[in-house]
Length: 310
Image (cartoon, rainbow, N blue to C red; front, top):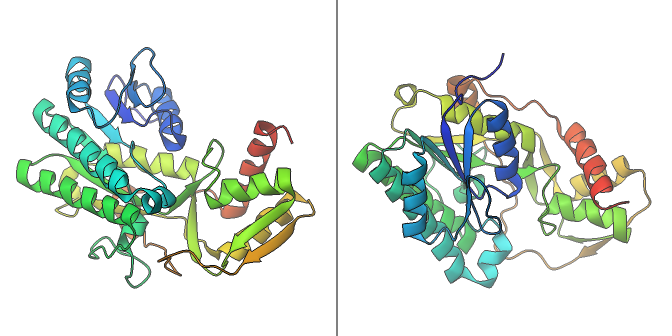
């Protein structure tokens, strides 16, 4: 059944030219929405090139464009960046989110969806549930936990229609962050024929890009009266796998001969097992992941093979 929720709605996506933002933009356009964007790199019709820290420019754009719904995806999304420059990671994620929330409050937006991550749960028992108190350790995860709290405070203090999705690792065609595990491994398989593996025992869950986009779509259309006070939703695929196993799976699916070299040094402050319960999303949103890991990896391999010319 065709989604009619977005028909003629004015939808802002911050980070619109990123991996998830670009895919979400295509889906909303398909559903008849009018898409606007904030980008670090691109300026074109309905998209401004602006720093998410530039409150005046962002607020003016939201006001002039008469935005109905905002998906706030812009920010620092890499764990490694937080390790290298924690101050900047905190500044971008916290102040950038605050700018969006304040403008949304002033301009009376109908829905604000602030992207988060399952990594904020940190040292909690798995599976992670939405009611858990976050226990992050590293700067990136801590910065996201801070933005979650700020978003919740705006929801409660100003009755702002905020929702906070916490995703497991999202992967799939179009992700050009080659320091992330799946894109990095696929590129190594296709180009280098050699893979360096740190540790390998960490267990994670990986959500295919199409399922992540559908999660955002479902969130935008939910009636907040059915949600209650806890505006947080977990999204995962339900296929837990170790780093070693996913590397082996990618190699096997590629059909290529690749050597793997294990690096003894472990990642600093890395939590060994992380995955979520997404029962709440299934119950209240009717959302379920549709793409199994093997199919998602096959699709990804095909896309990267074409993209890299290999």
